[in-house]
Structure formats: C-alpha cells, structure tokens
Length: 534
Figure 1 (cartoon, rainbow, N blue to C red):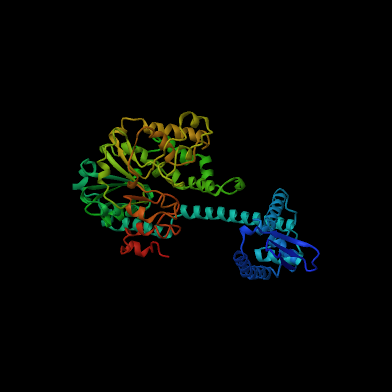
Figure 2: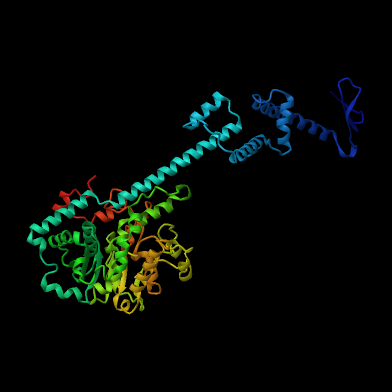
C-alpha cells in the first residue's frame, strides 16, 4: 500500500501495492489544510496505530483457547462492538426449562433406580451417558422421594412429640407419690390449710384472690412461688388451688410443708365440692364417658388418616386437640368459678403453665366496664401461630350452626391469665351458653370444633370480654422456638401454652430458665425425685 501526495498537496491518494487501483483519494482544499496540519495528523495516526495493534493482540490472546481463527475472532468481537452479547448460555437455560416442563407431566417409569445422593447422580450420568431428559426425569424422581421421606419424618416427629407431651415425667410422678405417702405418715403434711384463724380471709374481697386448677404439683408450686415473689404486697395474696381426688393428698402435703409465706394458700379437691357432681354437670359426664370421645382420644391417630392431604401444621393441631387434658374435669372447671367461690367479687384465674414476673395487683384494679372477662386479645399481632387468631382458626364454618351464629373474623382472646368480675358474671347466662354449645358439638360428632375449653368459651363469653394490654400476658412459649427473649423478660405473665412445657424434656432449653428459677432444687422431695435431671 502506498501514499501519493500531489505536487500541489491538494490531494492524497492511497493505492494498492501494484499501483493499478486507487483505494482512497482525498482531496484537500488549500484554504482548509496546511502542511503543519497534515504533519500533525500523520503524527497522531502514527501514535495511535501501535495501541490498536496491542489491543487486537490482547483480545486475540484472551480467546486463543476458544478461537483459533480470524473468523472466530470476528464473531467474538463483532457483536461486542455492536453492543450485542452471545446468548448461547441463555439458549441452554431455555432448552433445559423446556425439558423440565415436559418431564414434569410425565410419569416416573416403574422400577426406576434412583441414586441416593447428588454425587452418585453425577457419577451415573458420566457412566451411563444420560441425556438431558433422562437427567431431568431422575432428578424429579429423587426430589419427590426426598420430599416423601421428609414429610413422613415430620409426621413421626409430631406423633412422638404428642406422646411425650401427654406423658407424665418420671420425676413429677415420683414427687406426687412421695408427697401422697407423706400425707398419710406426717401430721404436719395434713395440717389445715390455711390455719383456722385465717379462714375468714378466704372470702375477704380486700385481698387479691388467685385461682389455679391443676393436678401438677410441681407446676402449681412454680405458679404460686412466682406470683408471691413478684408481688409488691405478698401478704395480700390468697391462692385457691383446686385439684382432683388422686392428687389432693400430695398437693396438700406440698403447700403444708412449703408454705409460701406471707401469702395464704387453700387447697381444695373437686370431691370436696358437694354440688359438683356428674348429676349436676351432665355435659362433663358426656364428654368423659361417650364412647366416640374415648375412641377419638385413645385410638390410633395415624391409621386411616390421609396424610397426603394433611399439612404438618393441621396434623399438629389435631394431635393437640387429642390431649387428655381436654376431657379433664379440671380443665372445664373454670366455667364454674362463680359457683365455686360464691363470696368472691373479683379474681385472677391462672393456668398451671404460666410464670408470673411482675406484680399482678393492678390487674384486679382494672375497670372492666361491666364486662366479665379481662383478657388479652390474640388477633393483634403478626405471629401466625399465637397472636393472629380469630374465630375462623377455632371453628368449622362449613357447619351451618357455626356459620349462622358466629363471625369468622371476630377476634379471639387468651385463656390462662384472666381477670373475672364474678358479680357481673352471675348476672349472665355464660355457663348455660357454654353447656348448650358443648352439647351441640357432641351431637355433631365434634364437627363444629375439636375438643377443648377455649372454643365454647369464645362463644359463651361473646360480648363479655374487656381487652387488656398484651404485655400482661405473653403466649406461645410452648410453641415458639424463636420466641424473642427481650419480650419474654418484659412480660408480666409468660405462658408456656403448647406441647413444649418447661417441665418436659421437649421444652425449649433457652426458655426453660424463666420457669426453673422458681423451682426449689434444695427441697428434699425435689432432689430425691431428680426433677429435670438430664
């Protein structure tokens, strides 16, 4: 290639080396270009050409392993210079998506041998030269297999947890037996509770009255101890502990030998309330004796159940409803509080799986505005398990009687720490409503709701509930493994509702210390029965 400058420097010709063909001819007007300008132009070109050469060389070397020809290099550089990108990777993804969609609707061949791990799958692909379709088919079958195994393991875990939650730990059973034996052999264990001179205080409405219904001696001791230790005026506390006949002697022995001074404790057995008989409470008799209910609780929970159509959460709820406590007289006893304590005006009812962390006397001073039940509402939080509960979570709204009388969006409330105005309660028909709905549910073969005291109470107390601030009562410590510790520390009452009770081995380890701090491990009965020993 040659450059030719005309004598007048008015044109520049770039020609091929043989001189026959003019490749480019540039005409330059004299007035627009000077020798100095031309010189500078050639100098700049001479300066830039080495950089162009170096850039081309670098790009070529980068692609030497993939491009071995000038044509390949052109295919690589051309789209980049034009702002385009090689979409071969995207085409591969699109092709694989197409294969996956095809395999998704196909049936897995019978007898297909599946690898046990991803490494084995890769090894089989290499050895057997699988195509993409075969790989996708095996991969889908492996995932379905693992999903079934995980699902079966989850249901088995729920069953085992249900049995663990329904059982009585050996240490607690030992405690009850030893205290019962103490009642028969030790006069101090049988002494009157409270002493005769303090009996008038049991109906003195200037005192703070707490009611606890349980057959768990250890749990009862924690509730009473935590309440007394958290109180600003423990000398004003009166506890009314109600238990069943088999536990009465042991419960009496515990509080007789370990009085929570200066508080007052009364222990009563169900058998000591003359009017509380099956003849006067026919619904409870039906709940305990009906054959269908017995089969519901004691039958095989897995046999006949279509687990493929049941979610683990639904299955867990059904198992919880099968807890033996739901057919216990002690669990339904709270609906009879106005009759059990005819001389009291206002009380705080506590479940046996709560811990008191603050003085509760202000609760008794809350003006309920003529309502009967002061309770924390459970539809005001984002927590799906505990604090987002409405009537739809407890009732079967496909049942016509439920659909006609209840609103699925109505807010639920918590049982387990409630302020009851007994004067207002006695003016209502709450007990009668409770009984009538229980009868209807029994007639419908438990299709309106699963057994338990909360659903009929939600109906019976409808229109009689006064909401109290949520910090008074924190729920879910028996459900939520990820319960916020700071929230637990701030709550006045923490409630281990759920299966993971703190006295069970399945209790959550990080939540148990809030409960065990009120267990007196130095007590001989506690230490000899190895309570919560690992």
